[in-house]
Image 1: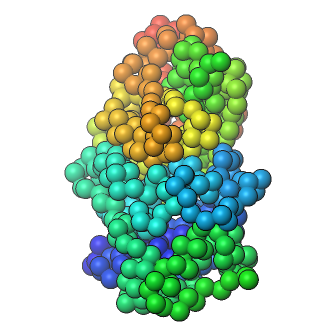
Image 2: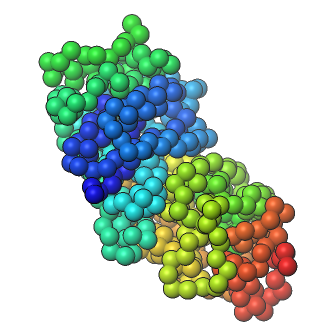
Image 3: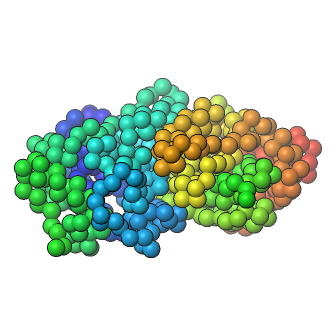
Length: 225
Length: 225
């Protein structure tokens, strides 16, 4: 019997690739998506299709209303998604403590599944400067998780896998294509419409478009314009 | 202007005392309760009354369905709450990764409030053996939190305060009484009825009852039997 892994799945390109890598490493994959009040439902509907296409054993969507805290253009509809391009500051699309919360939920499911492996598709290269995408953060979360659970007390070490953390968008796309990821199912755009059509102008669209161009691969993203 | 603190408030005795201590330390308190699918709504209704009685600046209840993961008698109605008394194993009332998830939510709110202090009423003495109530876990969470946020990147240190972690139940009660906590508002029972009446027989009721007895203080808990 293969080992189980909880794989965080946003519906985007990076996490779809992380799921394909976990599957390629022979893990039995339990995909977890978090409905945190993001602007577009297209992301979650993409996650469902990706989980199915990559044969996840199960897929759960956990609902939690992070709009209650506000502070991000991805959850607070009073703030506008910037289209001015990448910059060095942490952008307004950063959702406070999002990866901490999502990893905590993955940890809860891992504990009930008696599973010691969690995959997350964070990327520290084309990552818009979010603090919770950095290797030092992931390492600190893993240390904490190994003190947080029943399994930890019993000495069963938990590992947070970040298989795409050091890859360029181009390398992520090439890796995923080799593993059979259908990127036309993924949605990266911060403000996709309900059908999953991307705006083409937000930071996430720009980074994604550049990745396909650099990989020399046709971009299957459906754009609104 | 006094500094802000996010205070996790369950509706029980320990977190009510933690809130009173935060207030006594001149923090402007933002109380946070988590509706994670616990069996009784009485706990959350108690939290509301306590937040009001102790003059919290705001009180938010965040809903998240941890029953989706199962694995605890507090969220899985197919499992029975044990009444056999304390033992050395981690009991079935342990909710997987609960404190990790609650602290993560507190961290998100702290970040949007631009606040650097979080209070949690964990207790490592009368604590039923939960792994996520231990000082080593809290320290590891604080380390992780200081790598997770925008503020952390800007060098503003976040502190997780655990003012009752080393106190016996008796000492917690005495501290709270000095600070004006009305313990008749708190609910500790794992299976209180809707009106907040305690069962009197679960682990949490036993520990609470013993605390009042040892403090030589009349127990204002309303018991069903």
